[in-house]
Image 1 (cartoon, rainbow, N blue to C red):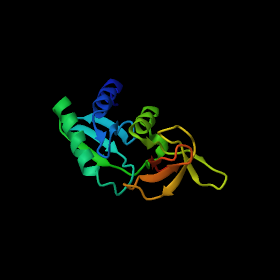
Image 2: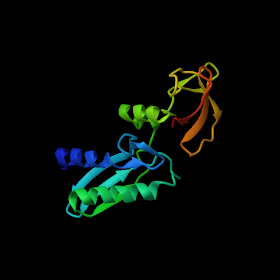
Image 3: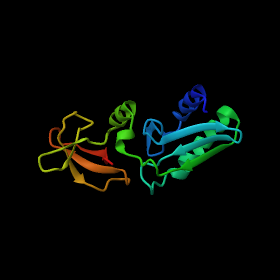
Image 4: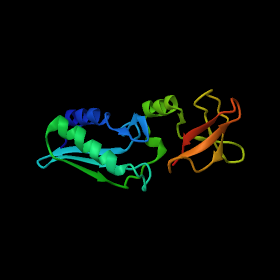
Length: 159
């Protein structure tokens, strides 16, 4: 059975691994870490990507190996798993706050009367962000437009 103190310590170290596209938010805060375990053969980390085709997965795996090897000196195995699937509900409250502080709306959880996704504007806070373009700069983001302050902004797609 895994030692909870060991797991907590490893999760604390994994806070150092930031999303390469959003460097304010860690993979822990994004809810990508499924399981961390220590065995006779070293440390094993199971991660769920936010999107299957994410181009940053190799970089994330390298950074996980680097920080855990530095911390423990043990071999590190990183596996990307699809079960359980990642959903935007896995983002921690701290991760949602950091996304907003970075200028990216956290994944919206509301829809307007027409059924369209509505995002809170990270600039003025109004819940009047309409999707301008479903396809943003990355697969996990869309471009929104705030009807209140008239600013365009990026927002994480709800999954």
